[in-house]
Image 1 (tube, rainbow, N blue to C red):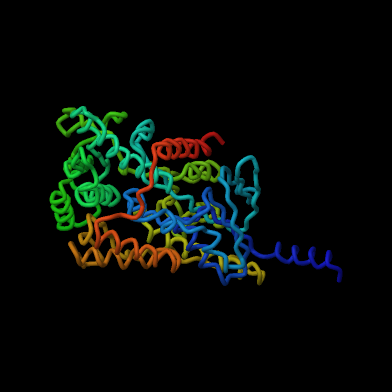
Image 2: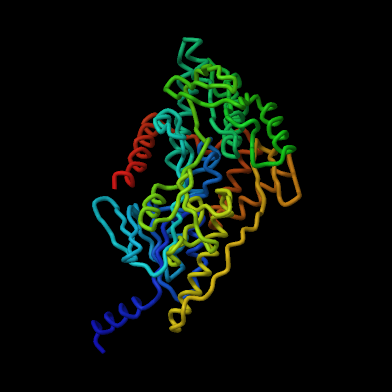
Length: 460
């Protein structure tokens, strides 16, 4: 047999294997891919970025505790030892169930990927509830670009306050508004307060950073709405001790460069002058969900998530699975554990399908997805967090230690765990934070990059 014949034969053999395309390298996509490591399948993982993102710790990148590399390892390196995976960088803009193809774009190059099974785990983006123009002045926190932009805005506000002689402008620059009192908003507000009151307390000469005003705003009547009342109260008390002003029952009706406008339950409107705003009030599924719904006839909920079958497949398309923030099944929350378990469930079904296909048997009956709730957690400040695991409710230091252990366990890679532990030790036991590099140009560039990326699918 010649070399060319061996090449053709080898290629042909590879083509006979079950082809799996995974869209997205977040928790759902990564854990689905890993769960197929020993399956007789060929996997192509495609994502718009080159990294896996540990999204729950983005706020620590934004506030200088962690570097982006510690929570966003290169996906090629994460999967380098898994021989049945090929990683492609590209923006998926179309899925054709009739031809079982996925189309993606990277720069000027278009790619067409064929699949026998498809896992769609493209994640979610920030939702502004129909007010997308708010994003220009109140970035969300869904990507590394967002976190670096917010870091630049926070540190830039302190620097500008240091050189202004106008008292009103200084107050505006030292006012920080976080919209959304869920876990991300609570964690962000708490860290900004610690940054101002502790880390930067003695760093400036003409301003006192401890006088910074941090306002947490939400239309809901409580902070951390998914948590038990006792933990909500504990979180609110902890925020109060940090000096965070909690404005509940207030809807944001306007956001501009100079501040935000709020409307209270009685209809009264008021204004908060603030240079730096962060939006964490809502999420919407990737626009790819709408593309897939149009192609398959599946239904979408108000957040753009696909309503899936009990096995997480798209109705009428058992070869397409939707996991993580893009799927709606029994009102499951958009948290990492749902994505992880969903990815593993889809992988098990695909492996069974591949075995049956190779043996010439029909597709086996599938078990429904059963989510095992492993608890909810939110950190307010160093040594202070709230956690609910089953019937166990913890607040304060015990909750914080549990939060540390759980988050370390799910950070991908030994090196990332090690460097994260070092960064946490340095930040929590000392006053300084190791990641304080930011520029005005960085903020502008990140903002423009985010806006361009969000338009790609809609333009397609």
